[in-house]
Length: 309
Image (cartoon, rainbow, N blue to C red; front, side):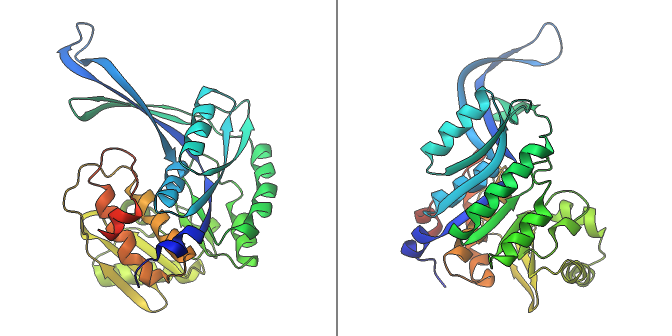
């Protein structure tokens, strides 16, 4: 089934999770520092982009659908820059603020078209702020067709189990980009989308494809999930559900940067399901979207016309 642009425009996805600001400093590298054996970067240009679950939401609006973003930020310059970018990209921000929280910023220094250094600024949010967001989450649920949890392990999803229960009670499909080695808190979700390394943390090593399938299906049934989508880089993706297994090979022609490819996959899946496609119908399109985005630099998105090209 081919995605329909008119149906996409009506699709509404609620994105919940850890929001970040991605900063890029671009510069020329002409010499090595006399102080240490490191390159000296003369910064010529700065750029700010939406990161974390904000990049997921941006992928949704890029496809022509509607996205609301529920998260917690600090009361700092980075949070106001994030809010400005959210407005500019058509995302509805629902941001809780905590004056004691440092908004997560990932600063990447780029020289000669490659990343030389990444500096992270972050700390953990207070549970009181997150509890307040849970109440707002319940208010937002009825107006959205699908809920997408983007877990970056920064503490923004401390109440995810209760949020999944509320979404299920409201009849909303739930998509989760998981983190960590304990997936029990994701119980009852519609679909989780780990990559190979993330899945390995949970089920351990596998001998072959048959062993992998057995382990994934055991995990799926133990957690009462409808499906698990395993993203496999150059090997494409595998969807495991009650019907069995569906493989799609990668369609990437050129891999320039895999940053944010997982965001694009889950955003495209959730958006297409919100527009009326089944998971299995949405899978090849999510795979195609990933193939487009890895050909771009940094956290990037895919438009509807790029997906259809």
